[in-house]
Image 1 (cartoon, rainbow, N blue to C red):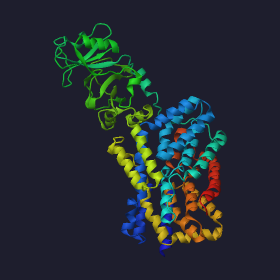
Image 2 (image 1 turned 120 degrees about the horizontal axis):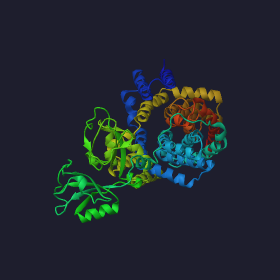
Image 3 (image 1 turned 135 degrees about the horizontal axis):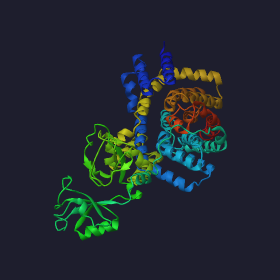
Image 4 (image 1 turned 45 degrees about the horizontal axis):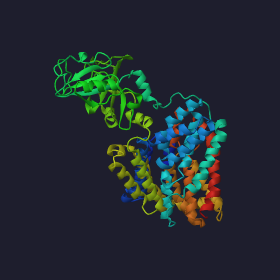
Length: 597
């Protein structure tokens, strides 16, 4: 076989494995690069060059920016604002959530936007008496349209922009995608409003994502947090020194002393000493009076109101004591400070409050802990407790515009300015933004690494050699000649139509990023052979690549909404097909007007 045939065989096998969907997509991509090396189509350097490609680096940095925006509560703030201003009309809410999805996608990619909005949209549906299936699919499809608003909105946009630059026509300007993205979004939202109620199912899903927006009120009620508690340090001149035990130290009315702790954190069962700590509960003004009267210093302000449970800096976590935990048999009391400055707010056994304590913990006891979010996050690795809800998930849903949110938005704005000016290469701009977010402590180092979708990075990096091999081996020219023979030369509109259908069809079963990487060299070869400008051809490929609207497996965003929306495989094409027709119309009308053929 000649090189072109070999490249096409590798391509066919890769597409077949993607459709088969039994192997990880990253493994398939790496196998493709290895096969190209083994057949001699690419050298060793070319086989691994994709992982150092600027496109891959830029895509990786966008995940860090996305994590910063989401984890600092910016998306939660946007959702709360939406709830406050959209009203209760179903149509207004539908339009609002679709536009919000598109906006977020343009900033943090489709998958991040859908993940952030999913609990909010389900909550809105329940409040309006709607099935979540009436809102979730429009949200995902509007997000796909939002992926065409800016250069950074989708990996597909980055790929075609770099391809245009390599073709000698220069990259697409940062905001040029909006020239087609806005018509795509407008038509998508309109079709969702007009056809969604008729074509979308009304089902009650078996499983829904947790709604934690009212988590603080729920915990306050469940654990009966009526009075706040305070940790008061005994000063050297306090009249309580030498008195005890703890239960006899209150004022006999509203202020109760729950426990006394020594400076090293041990419970004091006898008399109070200098520098001991009193754990006190009662109304705030009474506790203040008690502290002044007895010469005590306030060491920690207590928690007794739902508004105090969740703040930008601190929150609460509910944990359960598992079997064989080292906590079994330990004596604890309300207000007790644990490792990492976590404080016990309350304990329950079989749903009943155990009181102020001290009590001896047993298997299955529930403990409510309060502390800084960073300390609560470390409970994920604590084998002595089981978390009921992830602190990270709780924070994202309950703390709008949290700590460091302003810095995250400013870094995002700087990234947009750098990319919009065209003076800074995308990979450099992305690296500057990602490093700035880490240095400004918007995200931690481990959090930044963990936010990157390494599957996407590996997929793009490993498939770049296949895209190169298709172009250099002559396979792209061969496929392009078949396309030209089928559509005829001098018929650029027909060429655009065929490329749209080819890309969109493949994109329903294969990752849109992988699809575009495969189709781009074919499209460029066809454009060169027919004397057509590369930019309109590449823009059509980008639009079709983002048109993953007919199946749940075409994008992770579509898959995320399947269970919460109660969707079945065949539900997607009913609304997706009319929207795809609109995208096809935009590709053949708007694109040639903006970028001359």
